[in-house]
Image (cartoon, rainbow, N blue to C red):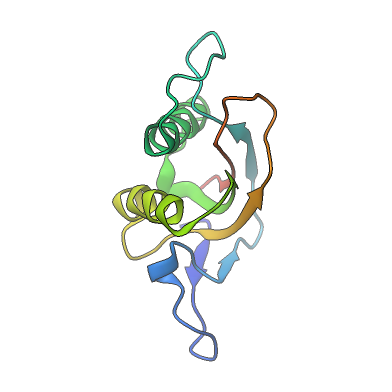
Length: 132
């Protein structure tokens, strides 16, 4: 593995919140995935539903990674952006993260924001992956 994810015993266990504290990548070959949202192939937002937007945004991250011969297991860091963040939206995000990464989610920063680039966007995610 080209990177290591971890949670020091001296910090709280963040897995239930959908992230790990540490992503270490010695001698890394990094791939940066720009912010992905619930877009179709034309760039239009595919749904007004927040959970559906999260699903589509992560599907788009998967497509971007695949174009570089990578997958979700190669992701070391996520940054997520939620418009009008609340606990229900966090739960929808955590459902997807748990399905993709299980007990070893990447390091993640979540930002609650007032708005994103397009009026219909409720969620955006960018990623940093490490080539094995």
